Length: 564
Image (cartoon, rainbow, N blue to C red; front, side, top):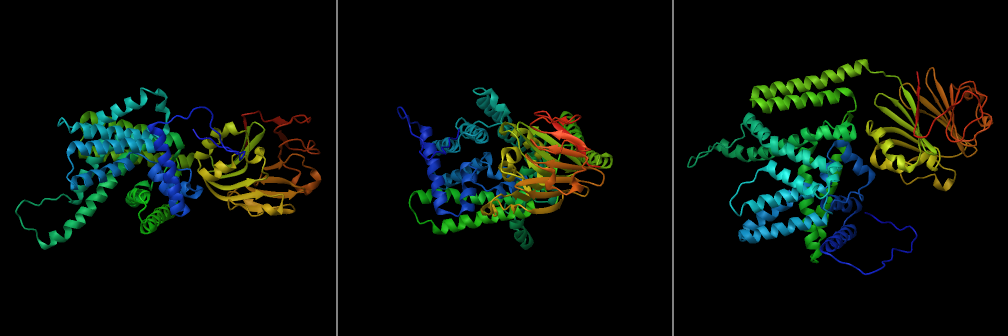
């Protein structure tokens, strides 16, 4: 839980103060965040807090959007990957120092439990921590560890005390990725290494040729790249169904991007860990700070450039995606049932790819490409979305705060917003503006400002005031003419054969040119005089109009207009 105090008086404690071991972890977490903020620039401090402590709130909206768009947002979410990197480094150091096995086990166990507490016992870290402890403790009685059984045991530990944790999206993604890695990562790596002839076939006592000596370090680097690729591919294949169901999108470039982003993230992790340890003991940290800032800049810069690649993230809400997932799942089940060899694997991959490609082609050929203006009413406000194919623009994003999930679900199907037009700062027009700007890729923000002091918004929006008029081309069929008159903003949305006039509360016909009054549809946000006698269909939100034949959009309802 997070508590915020806006009064300025501060939060005062009442009653007796209680302390616990977890309280010390929380105190350490806050101290590290303050240390990062004071010693690093804003970008490096935010990214370090995200990858080391699991605090993504400090990341800017642009950075979060870049990681989400490229499909590598898991890199800035503390998970089993981060804990595995740390424990691997600690284990190697303890081996170099020749520390007793029992003492090493105790040190690693304390570190794992401490890191779980430091990150707030998030399910992804807890899953990895439980599996790591099982693996290390199994070495005492000389027992081997089965990864699938360990994953199942971790699931029991997390779900028995709290059965509702199965609904946690982070937990489902973490378990799906881990399951895929355990099942397929080694098999994929073995197949790729054999195909590229990367296996080290040197025999004991045999002298290497000069060419072999030159190729040997290159093969080592390639084997590491193959291991990263195999792990990412195995995890991504099992995570794809979850991302499609949860987010309605797919990132086809995640694998090649992760080949570079993953090592950079590991470097940031290790540098952040060393930076935190040395800084806590008062050691000079200027060189470490410079190195950490450089690594953070390289990671965010690389992800940002990759996010600008066309089709980096595409919507996956059509039926053929679910058909493709079902066909692929059947092929996998049959392969395991018959203990398939290489020939079946290649055939199954071909069938899966053909299913996806043919589904996409048929959907593109049979899809209705008509632009649509949809009005969603939530409470006292409304959201107006103009869609055509993959284009989406919002002419208003208002409503009641508790309906945010419906707006988010609508936007996840088209994560890129071409235009966001905010005609006022009231909740009826901009209740979800901050969330949309921070969580989605908004290319153009236009904000009406009554005062000249607000003509330079902090979010980089284009501000316009009274007495202005301009036209926006939303897509190939639909445009909108915007009028700011008398501290009110009118919108005339039009295509070749259809027009919609959106009238703000208190709007007057005299404020508009006569040509715009003969719209096919007139939407009244609230009370307005003089628009009841329009020839087109009258739509009302809020107060009911006295005109006959008008349409009242009900609360939690929607109205669709085809802009043909």
